[in-house]
Image (cartoon, helix red, strand yellow):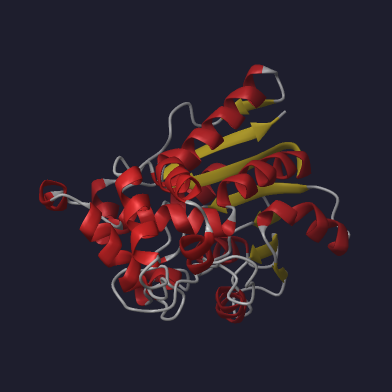
Length: 303
């Protein structure tokens, strides 16, 4: 079992070999992992190149960063780690004195470790505080704040826009009705509200009725889509000529942004598409890791 085999832990890195293969790194390159997470992708780079490729790992979650740093230190001495959003990768590179990089990976969404971690409010399987912040030390906004203070129209727009939830209006109305009786405090409070607004017929689908609402609030709390747009622009600017950027998305909103950004760069002659169509997990990977089923990998090369 290799050091980068993530089946030992909770989180399993998605499209692991495909993404690193398509980055086409070489000895002497600099690789920026903008979403370090459990460190699986960076660990594979370290396993393949040892100290011959410099790794820069970023993550907003200090707990994830600490775990991955400890793990990667056993594989390479040529790695640097920063608690930071990839939307600020330009600031990190400047602080490190790095001009350009040869490969960038963004593995979007939320890791299994974060989803399963207690006390963060990402999962509706446990009754816990409604935070949903990737950085647990950032209390500027939370799902609890949104649910208890934002108006019904704004809540509906979040659930519909970020969750693509057809029942967004009913769910928003139920949230506002319930908070007048009792403020939202925990994930089960929200779960009950979604359940009350969901007809019995909709509860028979494979996806849990609360999935899209929880996703929408997480995206809103962390400003994920705005960060993605900013990170793509800054990442492309930071690439060396012939450098590549790989992005793994997990829902249509993310993939739409990535697809359009890559398309525009290719059409104006600034880049070429390495993947004409997104690469998706094999049936074998999905069977091994069901959470990978919605993943899409797109790769672009700067000219």
